[in-house]
Each structure stands twice: as structure tokens, then as C-alpha cells.
Length: 240
Image (cartoon, rainbow, N blue to C red; front, side, top):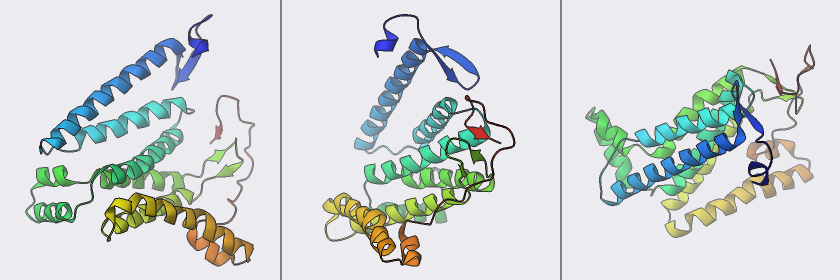
């Protein structure tokens, strides 16, 4: 914040535009206030029992993808990377923020059989929507093996692996929500995550059982891609 108050305003690159950093920060704060107001309105509607389609959630996803994608180097691959990160993160947020009710799933299936698409949209969990949008981004990232000059690696099929890990974590959380102690579902899920991501892979890796370790988290070293034919410039960390 000291850089925003003294001296000439620095420039920030967003997509192909060089913007004044003060103006960009003010624009970002304005967007944050707008989405906070929209979220408060939706929470009030939910408290009053008014069902609405997830149009605001979808708009928030699109906004974050466009906003964060502009901060990465230009290109469809960078935009897809931002989209996958946003949708994956909001999948976790959505499944924790919403109450897990079996009757809601039953209503959703009943409306689907009746072809009542508006009611289906109103009952659709936000985490389902976020996860569904993350699937095409993961497929695109896996199909286009773009070389990361910063890390000297390609993602290959790792976005699909991350997508399955998100699915596994959400399934564990829903399982605990439907268990005997739903109030402790989040704590139990975090404990399970520590075991699955840290303890068990490290234990099997220390024992030399790499096959069992790969079933949990460690899928071996990321294969390195061949070096780029041309040296990457400082402004573009992707070599396509």
C-alpha cells in the first residue's frame, strides 16, 4: 500500500493493457464491494426461503476467471489455468458453505424427472456447478501440454488427477455430513486430508511401496518436457 500513496503510480499489466495501479486497485475494491452486496442479497433471500437459480454464483465464477486470467500471461492456456483454479477452489467453498440435506437431492431428482428445469436450477448445489465447470478446464489443460518455463515442466494429465482428488475430498466431507456427528464433519474431513495427503503417502514412500503411495497422493515426479526452441521472454512464462 505504500507504493500506492507516494511517488509516481506504477503500472500493472492486465491482459494487453498497461493500467495505472491505483486505478486497478480501486476497480478491484469496487468489484469486491459489489460482490459482497450481491452475496448479502442472496443470503437474505435464502434466509427468507426464496429459491433462486445460481445465476449470481455463475456470474461470480466467470468474473473471477476473467479477472485472475488477466493477471497471468495472456493466452487461452493461462485463462484455462485460472478457470480450473477458480472452479476447483469454489467447489471446496461451495460444499462447505451449503448445508448438506438429503431432501434437497430428492427434490432435485424429482424436478429432473418432471423436466422442471427452473426448479432443477434452484435446487442445484453450488459445488456441483463449480465442479462441472472445472471438468472442461481440466480436459483442456491435459490435452494441451504447454511448457512452463518457470518450472521446466508440463502439466500433462495432472489437472485430471487434481480433479479426482477434489471429488474424493468432497465425497469424504459429504460422507461425514450424513454420519452420526454432522457437526464435526469439517474437522473429520481435515483430519482425513492430513492422513491422505501427508501421513499415508509419506509412510508408504518411506517403506518403498511406491504403488500404494501413488494411490493416495504421490504420483511420482512430474515428467519434464523438452526445452523450448526459443528462450522465453521475461513477460511470458509460457512457451507454446
